[in-house]
Amino acid sequence: MKVLVIGGGAREHALCRSLSLDPDVSALYCAPGNAGIAEVAELRPVDALDGAAVAALATELGADLVVVGPEAPLVAGVGDAVRAAGIPVFGPSAEAAQLEGSKAFAKDVMAAAGVPTARSYVCTTPEEVDAALDAFGTPYVVKDDGLAAGKGVVVTEDIEAARAHALACDRVVIEEYLDGPEVSLFAITDGVTVVPLQPAQDFKRALDGDQGPNTGGMGAYSPLPWADPKLVDEVMELVLQPTVDELRRRGTPFSGLLYAGLAITGRGTRVIEFNARFGDPETQVVLARLRTPLASVLLNAANGTLADEPPLVWRDDAAVTVVIASHNYPDTPRTGDPIEGLAEVAAEDAPDAYVLHAGTRREGDAVVSAGGRVLSVTATGSDLAQAREKAYTAVARIRLDGSQHRTDIAAKAAGLG
Ligand code: AMP
Ligand code: GLY
Image (cartoon, rainbow, N blue to C red):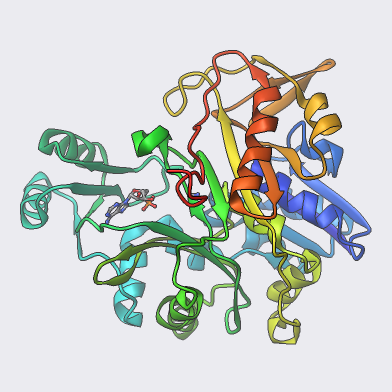
């Protein structure tokens, strides 16, 4: 099978790594990719948001499957363009991707499907904003309705900060604050059959102890030793299957990866958000634990034959990933700094620990930073404590001027405080 992956972050590196290890995959391409993905896939330049260009590339390559990684191309209809060219796509249509593209749309689907989520108001005027902030009280939760690369949500005690964020957006969702640990649960679906993956936890705040601004994600781990063993079944029944059924009922079936961001509150599990694609950095740890070869699962989801897929098989291992981010991330990050230590990790820590590239590019012989999140250092071990130790040992070998990473990824879950 020839597979083309669209995107160029650590999530796509994790996808390409798994696909490159799958004996069913005879050729693997990634567009546009990054310096790390180039080691496992053949890179092609493309504007990932240009459906016609992606469809032409997939046709030229004779791809049997196109996997669209990030949300922006999905929302822009890149999946539709490739499907119209007769090539199976893992990833939803633009209409179904509105589940991530518009928080107001997601709330509407959840209400229709009876999916538990935070109570909310959609606001377009300052008066509506003030009324909604007043109705819910602190902490205020203010969400840009549209795509914002993980940076559209402000959670604050400060009414002026809440107002300022609301006024900076055209349309906002203001909602009740959900208290409790967060879980990311991914499911692969063909629009009818839903296959859950293993749950993971993401660390959204920039600094240790969940301080600092929200980011795209600074680290993740899986499994979750503290979670109720019935969690996956419960979320399947209350959230994932009803959502997939509701989108099919509306005539906009969702196929691809349905990502439920959940809060485990004292009053039960609630959806914080949906995403329409694999999460980053959770994918890095979830795929590290998946034993089943990935390509046929994704192809069956693309073809509507997921019910034929045998049950997924998981490793007993735990996995931890730690994101190394540029100086000044998540504000305007500094780029172009050389990254050193990659060869040492490959020599000393592989195969248990490895580096997945996010914002990197090659400059002559050097690999340099090219984005906010630069690398995801991922490791597996017999338990979280061991996986964590291996991940941080590898992190310590990487040198990138001004870079930052959290030192507490998976610490609490591993019983270390
Ligand atoms: P989202 O982009 O919707 O996932 O929001 C980003 C982060 O903001 C989430 O992972 C939560 O940490 C936080 N957040 C979003 N909505 C809520 C809420 N209703 N209550 C508490 N925290 C929230
Ligand atoms: N890990 C959060 C996201 O992918 O949106």
